[in-house]
View 1 (cartoon, rainbow, N blue to C red):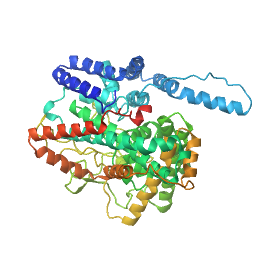
View 2 (view 1 turned 30 degrees about the vertical axis):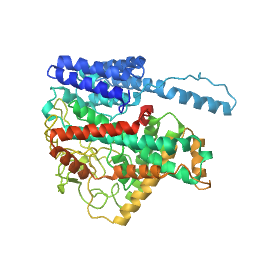
View 3 (view 1 turned 90 degrees about the vertical axis):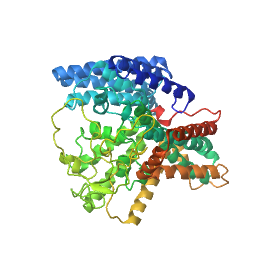
View 4 (view 1 turned 180 degrees about the horizontal axis):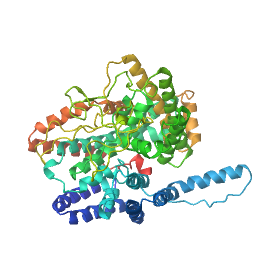
Length: 570
């Protein structure tokens, strides 16, 4: 079931109505929302509901056992089960085919049968959530929750198939008490869902059909101009497509009374690749940091080991996205450049080399007042309680807007820096919004401007950094989009050598690319201002504006099917 469809709209209306009706009685609400989430997941293939149910039972049993006996063997068994399920469904074919080809090269028979294993939608996302839950219980960051709470957390339909990757410590505390309808951030939810619809059906799908898919499906039939525009087009398409899903998921969760962490923060405005990974798929970035990079040793074992840890983390991140060598190389490229940036900063005595100073020489992070991109100027945040939060480039592991369900001892301070990943703080919890009508002008923007503001900077150097990072990311996206290495090589080879006309490079395509890049660069306070203007209208006017917007979107889509989101494959 795809978000921007009539089927999902009908599903959401029914679920919202029954959810708020049952909300005061958790004993009824939790089984209902769990059943609704399983129905949502079964819409693609009912057989895979058994997979997520099995994952829930295995990980809950492991978490309870760890909480009781704290035996490392239980943790290892749970991790093996989770990765085994993920490996079988997602990587068996890739592994078996790679082994088969390698053995054929030396004249040996293939030891593994080549099977076509169907990939369950969203398996990478709910597996990572299950892993984080069990590992956090082992670390003592959280305590095991009830089976029904964990089942709702893992299967909650807004984030089930394509994220954001929500931690148990962020979600399960919200299950402790019924949600208050007077605290629902209606305006923010409307802007998130509306913005997501525009990015998905107006920009991403248009670019896919008009330029990206034709060029990447048959690069030998297209000129250098079309290939170059297709590369830029895919950069915009994947941003609009994936951030659209995240925005709609966060907006839908808000309408149901729940808060998710933000997942994007103007990634193409990044001035370094480390900065890019603070802004792009932030919930995956911090997952890789907390459960891969730091357990490998982070930056505690010398520079060479730090660079190796970065490479391993990003290669695994690439493999998480897809079972193909193109994704492995994509991750290796990002890991190599992240290591190179770190080495350069260490050589010049910047962050990663000289502690205590930010990317532009500032000594502490600065955030917009109001938490997420407000227009009230800047305030210097107080020194954090734990020293790792003061390190340049480090973002806290959890959204400060969430608190664990049970008080736990403070974690052991660490001096780790990010491997170029993480989620920036989103500031204090925002004021509640009156359901359906009275909304506050201070509501958070659709995409929170959470990245620390810089001090005085060298603007030419900043823009040079942005241009270089953007084009590196675009070049790496070629590997991400190409079905195989041969196609990627042909794309790069013809980028500067294929002459001829470019009929696919139309005004519509260029405007869509410019609009997508513009949407990715809008400052957070613009969204705050727009939400304030909308909130100032009367309820009748708000309803007319929303209905008109939906009719325009429906007219734009027409009778064509909405393409599945790109990250459904992962």
